[in-house]
Length: 436
Ligand code: GUN
Ligand code: ZN
Image (tube, rainbow, N blue to C red):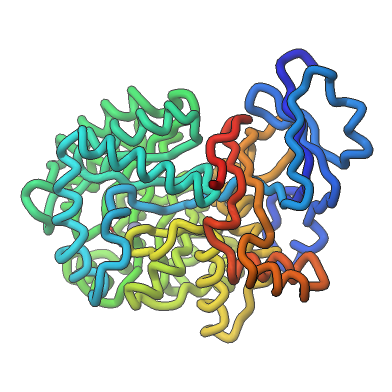
């Protein structure tokens, strides 16, 4: 070893790699009760047991002793809106009314760079204190909102995917761009931020109702010019939304076909929600290798519906987990798993704890095409990880005392857990959050 080594000791938990069939997850769990990670220059150098690894620790290494706590890869939130953190828990509406009543008026405030910068700082801190080390994040239509978030994330060395929203109709004047400015402003941001340190750019048509066909065509050009940029949008979240899209694009067979027509599907494209898709849509998702962001707290809060996770998996479509704050009601991926479990229950299905933690880490990494660098502790992966206190409250401790297996402990965490369980968050081989 050459650089400065950090040695991290604790109960390691991750998955061997991408697992397409959830039934195979139990045999793909890697659990080392007394484990060790060696980290050098922001990357995992070595992982294994303390016994095997202790002799590899250089004399001058810094040792972090987290025995009694889990060490897991950082959570990956595949769909979240940074300007919406201030409207979490806004009362009484479903999607389209919620957008007009709460979301659009709030997003207008982000035309001010100073304001966006202040909120970007709060947003990233909130991610980290919840153990989320990577997120695909919507900003507002204002390029300065994306600038503010990129600057803050760069300072923290986070792997973040973000971009400016594009919309040129059906929203207040101050939130509209045009086909031309959507193109030129996004292009300028891509040139500046895409692949800059750990940052990536995502093209963000808000959803089909707020983009004209002319704008979708410009976005198609951007996608062709920058094929390794991400694309994300909302799809088939709410029945009224779906009916509206049918009216606006009568020539397209389905909502997904609107995006597919403009070549916005693909390996680096992920679609949030996808509650109301049909068989043909799933075939299109599979053939184009598009991914889905599963947003359980949001879908329950807005009364949007139940995401059919098993159908998506049976169709071979990659699925990641997402908070969708501020329609989502928590930044915590543990609370998001709590809600995901209930979404499955309401469909007569289960969400086993290994699958829950897989979804929040490796599964989400895979859905964002980041599994070559994030998602588990393979050597060479980026050292973004969390230290989880398995019993942060007296109730959690009591329940844990009555848990016999690892799976049971994890299930208690995904039911009762939240930000209080996030003891430390590490980004790029450096601690960035310490619980008080
Ligand atoms: N559809 C279009 N915009 C939004 C948004 O901001 N949040 C959610 N949940 N759905 C959307
Ligand atoms: Zn959303």
